[in-house]
Every structure is written in C-alpha cells, then in structure tokens.
Length: 218
View (cartoon, rainbow, N blue to C red):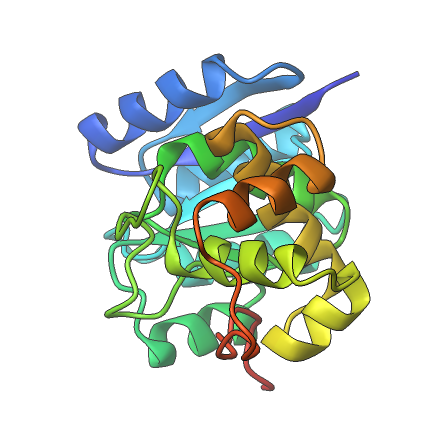
C-alpha cells in the first residue's frame, strides 16, 4: 500500500503543480485536497492520509500553522509537511514548533517531492534549504550544492556515517541525497558515482565544507 497524501493550499496553481508531480511518483497518491485549514482538518478526519502537506500561509482563522498543530495533536497517525515560499530560519523554526514533521520550500526541485515524502513517513526530518540556498541553484549535471558536497565525500571514500558527521546531517539524509545524485548522474550505485566524481575532477585533498541541512534545535 502506498503513501496517501492530502494537499492543502489556497493557490490553485500550486495545488495543481504539486498534484501533477506526485501523480508521476510510484506508490504515492493524492487522496484529498483542501483550500483552507479548516477544510484540511475535516478531510484529514475523513480520509486519514499518511501525509498532510499544508501551506504555511493559508488565510482564515485556521491558518497553515494552526492546522499543522491540530493535525499533529488530533491525528498523530498523519505526518505533517509544512510547505512555504518563505524558507528563512525563523519560519522553519516556527513550523517545527507548531507540529511539522518536515518542511519543504516551494523553491525545492519538484522531482524531489516524492523522496521527501517517503523520507518523512520513515520518521526522518526533511528540511528544505535556508533562504539564499535555493534548491534550484544548480552546478554540473543539475547537482545542488548539498548534493555536490555529498558526492565529493563519496568520491573520497567516506561511508555514510562519516559523511553525515562531516556535513552535520543524519545518515538518512545522506541516503536521501545519494538517491537524488544517482538519478541525476544516471549511475547505479556509490561506486559509479565515485568514479564519475574522479573523472570530473571533483576530488581534492581537502574535505568538503560542511553544509547544515537538518532542523535547528528548538
């Protein structure tokens, strides 16, 4: 049985875009859509989705954060993913304080949405980049700065645990980025990825600079 998702966003264009990308993902199905926080709460009670993607800034008495808070309290079986065009540190901290299991910036590469939801259901925090580090910022074969840092570490022969410690992230997050790296480079495993990194001159004697990806302590 796949991941059942509710999407709540008052902007129709955003809603249709999210639904369109998730429709391409195997094992993920949008089972409900809401235009307000109040409607989202009603639909979560009826549809019991595995994940509720809630826009942070929906209008009305039950805004996105209030909705997230109530879902977390009243429907603990549903993971709450807050989505927002604002990815500054204050917004992310507030989302996690109010009940989010994960935070996704609307600047994220939409091809990563499926992986983000899978990671969330596995109990691993997924955090979109901070402001100024948009996921759409690319370098060589579509790799983001974070993916490039992981690739360099893999090319240097580091295991996932050491990569996580070096980049201040969990092993689950390292695996998440490796999945995206393999897809973007069209390689099958870390050995092929390391070979690719060497062939493209990415491996140096110095360790990659740490890039903070995980949720801040709250």
